[in-house]
Image (cartoon, rainbow, N blue to C red):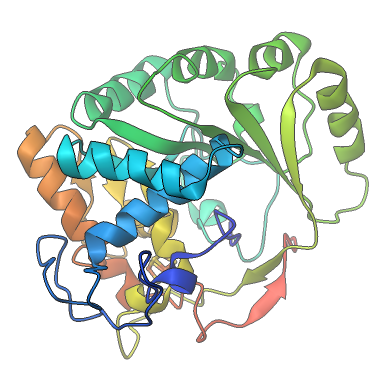
Length: 321
Ligand code: SF4
């Protein structure tokens, strides 16, 4: 779907150094390994930007602790203890959806053979990844419409008990009210449900919200969203990665990690060569590949997409075909 996956965008702070807020260009950085001297005197480089991205999610879970303390915690883990931490992943558990959004950024309506993934398979993929990283600050359980998955509860029970996953979002289009046992499982956990408001007629979102209140489910209601038209899948005059706000929405799809969900689906449908990162790579190689991805080196899809950039025009959210 063409929503922005998060509240802030990497694009908004891509040129801002976290330590001194100097505006600086870093587009010449080729990977996270090219870390020296690319920015201002405080050394704000791609690694710092990734730390800032981690901080963005860590702050949301620790609102009473100062940003300085939180940043220090992250810095301590990543720099002194050499922990390999990643800020965000959205994981597809289903490609089934009960809506048919005209400008779905995930290209879900175009997919053949849409499916609910086996929970045991999803857990195996996630286990494999978690065994090779030290922390994931935000996991988004993603679809399709996740409440269509008949065994969602099993996946939720698993992820909410993973200590390496610091926070969890579960996205829904607000059209389905889950069963009480599902709500009990989500309630008072580290899971927050993110409801999109598509302003569709006859949609029972208010009923869903009432249930969430009754069960103590934490939720965010995303009203008045504007989407971007990412355009058709044709070769552009340049790669949009640097400008695109969606590049911070890395996607976990069928055991591979992609720069974003659209990239995953473009690959799945055979439009572009597969530059996804398999979680079955050896740990060192997986980490190197992730660094490359964050540096824009695995972004074939961004040659065929306008993304959330100045090239894409604003459109209304959730318009149906
Ligand atoms: S420009 Fe790249 S990162 Fe942005 S939405 Fe398109 S494929 Fe994804």
